[in-house]
Image (cartoon, rainbow, N blue to C red; front, top):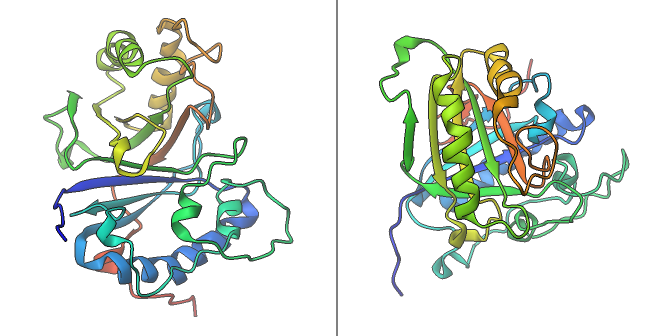
Length: 279
């Protein structure tokens, strides 16, 4: 038996089906999920953090914006490697979690609480519901397109992370030509956008259907809107466009995004102390 040491970063975009579920999802994440996760992968994960999703800005819905959080891991080896298949304890993963996150149709306030295998849950794609976005990317960003000289002294950043899934019949090469020739140059030229980073998704790790992740920084939601909505009308519409306005991709199914601050609300490997309630 041989283990491949392959450092990777993973990103999970977590949405919220409706506000009724925010406190329930938070309870599962902190009360159950963090401890289950660290118990399983603690020896081979170096960072495991939750970043709060900032409020959806005007017109943000057309970018498939998530409302709950970004979950980030730094792995030393793949959790999907054959050697990792035996787990001493099964993770507690009620099917309600997928409904709260919008990954399954919402059955309403009366949820059945049925449990399912966590890996099966993460691979769930019900067609019309939000696909579960669990993307592995290289531990370092592959392309640095703007703002490499930015430091912490330049102020807080409004980070826009977005991932795209190729429309049917469109190749990665064709979509990349559009991104690098038409999309990225507009953001590079505008002063409101201060940083641009991107990597291809390592689809071979877990079969993630999204193929590229981008991260762009702004001073705030107003600055983001001036570029991604107002100025983006100048971005040419590709022949394969699914919608009439930028990003020309079907929200949720072909583009998902979220807005996060610089810092996590919980860096779980170093800060987690369990479910300590308000007095």
